[in-house]
Image 1 (cartoon, helix red, strand yellow):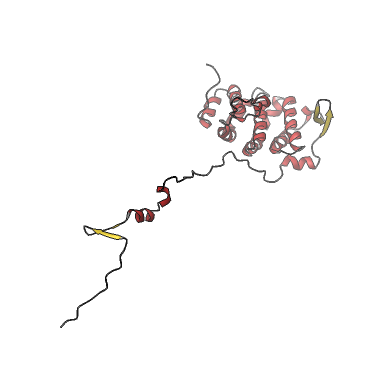
Image 2: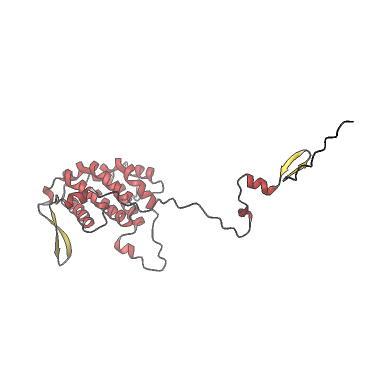
Length: 252
């Protein structure tokens, strides 16, 4: 007589058979597909994605060229105090300086936030733009684009505001400067596009930043307006290409 094949019953599994097809339970299926069981529970807190950090301040990577030259004593400047405060005492006439050499160095110092470096850099740029002629400033435009971009890329609110004020002073310093800056909008405007809507919402409180002209959003709008006014016929379309939400301030 043949021996019967007796096998133990299979252990119960999470699979149920319906019409010959094995189906996993709904909870196991979700777990297998990577779903979080907790996300289906009530009162679950779902965290959003982390901030991209587009406006986060970038620290300086080493000392600036301006600081190196200042500490070596290569600038013909000194600090002078009077009843109105501190100012630069130039050892030579400003309009006799070599603009190709000194102006890019002073622009490089716009990234500085420590005294006295930031004071000398900002005041030095202001004095050179005020006393310089078009023939002195215009040929140096290509050399100061990289320092301008580096200052804006720090994302430091004070540095960005100072650089915007310097750009306004630069574009109005001589007749052809505005048009000379148009080819460099791709280097200058991306950071302005990031900060253009960064205004303080002070509600009923007094917005002291407007009095001190440190409101980044307002300064960007002013700067873009001056770029368009002084940049010639191609200024607006190039600004619009980099900052699509910009609206013309020039009435036709």
